[in-house]
Image 1: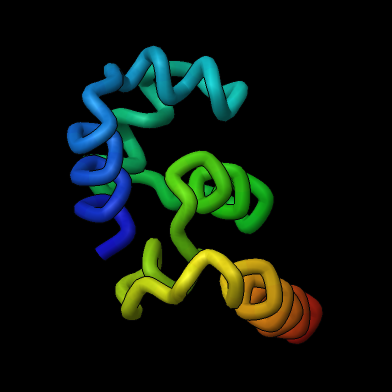
Image 2: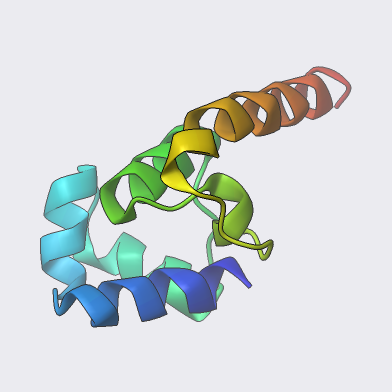
Length: 89
């Protein structure tokens, strides 16, 4: 799901993969891999993507979009979940 969301957000903003890569500090090929599903962004990159497009991380991973006023609080909760899952690996 994240691959479709990133691509559709990028296209809606009318920017290239290179332009998005420049904003996020990653290569154009990395954006291409995100959009093709060959690579998943890490939590920090997901946060950057969500902030740039003014959506929630939950939206990026397939959930519903939340109003921007609730975005930061929800993102903090999701990051805690990701962190706890990483600690259990």
